Length: 394
Image (cartoon, rainbow, N blue to C red; front, side):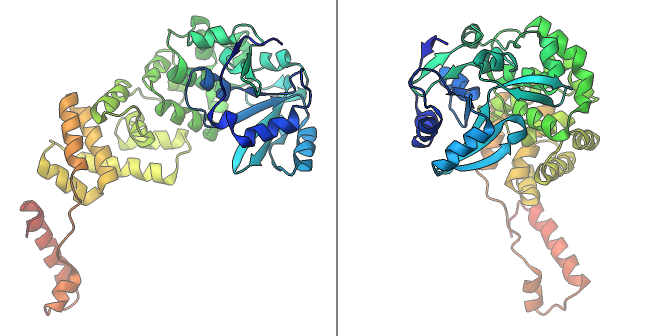
């Protein structure tokens, strides 16, 4: 392979930890034996942050492990069945995968054999932009001779035939839209869209964990409005049986004046801000207990929070705390069709508030001579109602 471009390595790609791995696994001075691959190369070319390192190598997993251990490097067999081991140097995990070719696939898993052919390995990858490689001097290699051009045009293009790529792993349907949400600029390829739509029914065969990871990554992307396109092509109807307003995603960023949105507000939008919608989401996705709790609490308080006012916000904050209160406020702003200016105003007001603290406790009443029992509870409730009504003033 001949280089097609060159970049200046920086950040993680230029770290001592990564250089050490190259010193061990790149023995030949001329022929490439170990190269950067995938996301780190893509992001470096786009001048975007590189958060993890993936390397491809001609060495088998056993050879990689042997060479690294002999050099005193910790090795974890994270995906040994798929040819991947993880080296840990100075706390940095570096995934190293042997070049592969597919022998058999069933739409969820692939049986692979190892190869030393960089082109053969590139042909089995999902998108052309993910086939780009780089050596430890910053030379860029493009085995398919189109990956760099597609990346520069921000085009998400399947490697080879989209139908074949999708049949190898149905998760690539969701990955196709996720990559568009993060990196795409032009309209998605019509042939790829048709292939995704025709195979969408197979999404139900995938594990909840794999589907959840992709959905959450789309939610956190710069363009989660891609969900609209997924509904138009009947992709999401295989996972969620009711359409939601995907325009809310861009509105959230505008009213909160932030580049991204939280996964929790994204899940609330997916649920349609309803308990039944939340239950549907829980059936289809593997969410954390905290996410489920936050969504359900937000839906609960949203029913009571109608008509935004300073006093109402303070009551909401007192009842729910800052995190849930902001989720509820944003949800109400979206549902009420509030303007961006009004939304920013109320979010600023909420963030500037301190959560009220009840100034009277049961022990205070006992200290004043009341006997423990139901009477104390009634007295506290009466005081609390009056205190809230008087805008939290004694």
